Length: 242
Ligand code: SF4
Figure 1: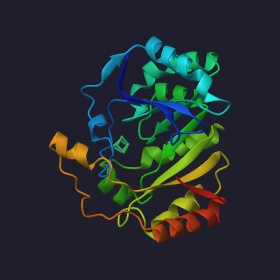
Figure 2: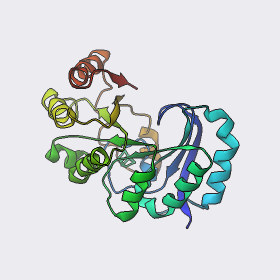
Figure 3: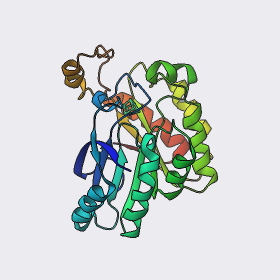
C-alpha cells in the first residue's frame, strides 16, 4: 500500500527526541482553527509514495539520527493511514530506526491500535480538555483522544502530552487544571510539552483562499507561557516550553 505524503523535513528537532526525519502525511479529520498546515487537512492531493521510498530515505539519513533520533510520522493525521503505516514502521524498526507518531488521537480502529502498539513513542496532542471548547476549536469531540491516552497508559506505551497554548482559546487556568488533574496519575507520560501559539501558517490560508478565523488572536506573552508552565509543573514536575 502506498502512503499519501504531503512533505518531509530532514533534521527536525521539534517532533520527538534527537534529530529526525519528519514525514508529514496528507489528510486530517480535525479542522483546528490554528492549524499551521491547512493544506494537509484535505484527504485530496499529497504524493503517493511507496513505503520502500520512505525506508530508503530513512536509511540514508540514519547516520544523523544518533542514539535518540529516528523517524516521526506527522501530518495531517498519520493514523488516518495506519493500515499502510504498520508494515513500514515494522521495517524501520527492524532496521534499528526509532519511530514516533505525532497524533491528535482522534481516530481508532484495529490498524491504529496495532500502530500505537508498535510506536516507540507517541506524541499526543490534546487540543482542549473542555469537550465543548474542543469541538469549537477542532470541529470534533475530544472523547477518542482521551480514550487513546487511556489505551496508551493501560498498555504501557510511552507518550508525550502536547498542548498548544492559544490566548483566549486554550489558556484558561480552569481548563489547564482540569487537563492536569485528569492526567496526573498517568505513569506513561514521558514529557509534557507546551507549544506556543504561532501564526506561521497564515499565508497558507490566504493562498488557499481560506479564512484564518484567529487573525485577531495575539501571540502568547512570555508571562502567559510561564504561568501555564507553572500550572503544568505543579502536576507533572517539569513541563517543557517548546
Ligand atoms: S490535528 Fe493537526 S493537522 Fe489536523 S487540523 Fe489540527 S493542527 Fe491541523
